[in-house]
Amino acid sequence: MIAMQRNRKTTPASSGFLPRRRPILLVSVVATATLMGTMTAQASVTPTAGVKAAGDVAGVAPSAMKDKLRRLVRMPGGPTGAVVVVHRPGGRTVYRAGVRSLRSQQPVRATDHMRLASTAKAFSAAVALSLVEQGKLSLDDTIASRLPWLPARWGNVTLGQALHHTSGLPDFFTSQRYVDYLSRNLHAKPSPRFLLRLMSDKPLEFTPGSQYRYSNTDNFVVALMAQTVTGTPYERLLTGRVYRPLGLRSTSLPRGPKMPAPYLHGYQPDPPGPLEDVSTLVSASFAWASGGLVSTPVDLNRFIRGYASARLFDRDVQGQQLQFIPGKSEPVGPGVNSAGLGIFRYRTRCGTMYGHTGNTAGYTQFMASTLNGRRSVTVSISGQITDKSTGDQGRAFTRLRHIETQAVCQALATKRDHRLITSIKEAGMDR
Image (cartoon, rainbow, N blue to C red; front, top):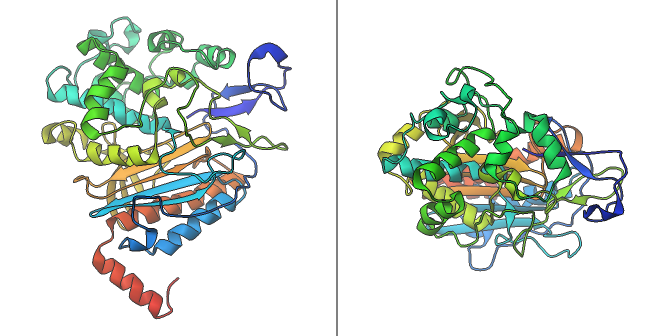
């Protein structure tokens, strides 16, 4: 997660940043920093062309989803835009509310690009696990054996521990050298090796394998191991092992801050002034394999179906992936969260799905699927609101989590559920 805070120093006019009413945005290392303010976007909810209208989907009442999305984008602390994609046997349904950009006021669409934040960690896990199936990597491979240029004190950390977030590796957002470099070079394109060397003085935070602690550094290590054993850049590994097999046509890993058009603009509150557009504030290189990917709601939904159903590696490898331990995704997902290898299990009141969440400046993501890939859901918004948010944004996150749960329930609902909901509504007992 990248949380932004203000610096009170004066910013030179020649700094190269977009014109701002107040001084330069800096990256805070405090993960609990909140982005306070009020978001005021007009809401509209319409089915996307080429997919079923919301009322055609059997399951939880579609009108409730429409209403919740409208309320989310209208409420103080809510995002300016939100997209929910629900895939079930027979097709997918798209719900959307709000606008792509406050400037254009165009409605948000499921084909708009967005930053994937930490859902990108599942992509690096997909690459690594496909290599485990082929015998090119092992979950027992260590940093010392595959990445000997990293600090010797990190040497015993294994690929499996990095994927499980039990490595003890310090999160690079806790490194002052990393944060200082980032705050001075927001649009730079540093290599992953360079960034990891900025925190080479950091010891492990605990004995590897002894506890769970979410760390962005883990997926840098995962992707670098994949690069090392194949001799192929991570970006090309993504293309050959993830994008092409799953038919992802709008997903990429950019190096700099630019976004492909059209894109969902991400905003951050800047009280007492207007919202800040932070879509292109920070270069994707700083998050790389841990959060740098750009995609669309439609592509993300397609990815999670293929990933959760083991289309990118065999069932034997998936069996190792689905060894769960107590651990929450960031931000926390719906229901009871448990951590596997590059995947989280979400046990909700309607059933269990598997996926990942993510958040970064201007964006929050949730994706989940059943293990057969036949039912899936993605929820994407143009704001960074999490379980650590307080005030208006804390209340917005509570509503967002309800939406995520309802989307899961709709994806898992059967025709029998649909008939029951219809009969309840006709009897006037719908709550």
